[in-house]
Image (cartoon, rainbow, N blue to C red):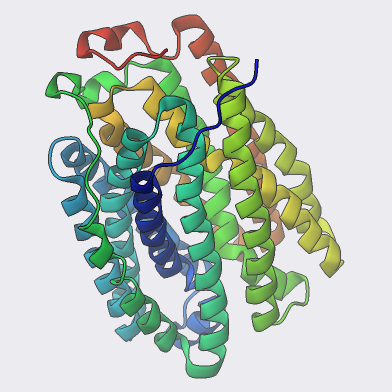
Length: 414
């Protein structure tokens, strides 16, 4: 039987455009420092372990702040929470560009995570509220394209501006750009999110086995992804004979192509499989992560520049399948009034544990070499793919909606 095509409404398009732009500027602010690592190493006189700790502390603040911001996003205005996030990361990025010591720079970078903690659960909750359940993975994947485009453009900007005008100028440009989408935010109406009877107490979330297994898998994926994002450019400069400009531009373009095509393909595949299996979106993520691993190892171990880029493109394509469906699966498990809270709890654990990745890889680099650290991070990602199989087990046993959530009048899973 052919399915009726689904056309986006003007409201849905406007909502996605604004939230994608917000995602874009946030990740530009997060990733702009990556190609600047060699300059920061010299200017601040720091070790690789210290540089790796920059992302770790950012993710630590993101993790801790996600729960209270997610909690309030299910109870008060989500637009106000998002605006607070925009203001936080813009001011923090500006402070980073003015920092003169490693400690002040570390504090500024950490508070970039506060901004993301505010906007991410609230924005994702708005998207799931505006789209039907069967289209959630694709809608969340489109939202994730802002993150991918912003991260890539932030790296390109950092590499080009940093090499010509200094690393401080790159931060100042991104900080100013971060405020622009806040103007359009207040023209968007918030979608409905269900009665207050659907609010779920935070401790109850930890009683959902599939949700807990999803968190464990997400921590592994986060460990690998943030390690690669932090050390990828420096690695190809040091081990693969790329220049700073070549590394920032080539890796950004490769990541941009693979991730954009991958995240959209992953969202479409996940929604397709979800119509046939209660665990269809989880199966799509698990298979993609396991397929990405050998190509990522190829990129790390080869000596040929072309093969490095090929391995990164293919592995990036499959790794990005995870981005949209992960949020859709969590929202499918929960009542609408628990969407932001559940994502906040998910971010707390995944960013807290996964955020250790850059620091661990940096420490391994100081003790042995960076190549070994990245190889270990790939093994961690494989563990995440295997943990997805445990999520499938719990969904098959308990259903997509755990029976204990019935008392909160969860929206129908039909």
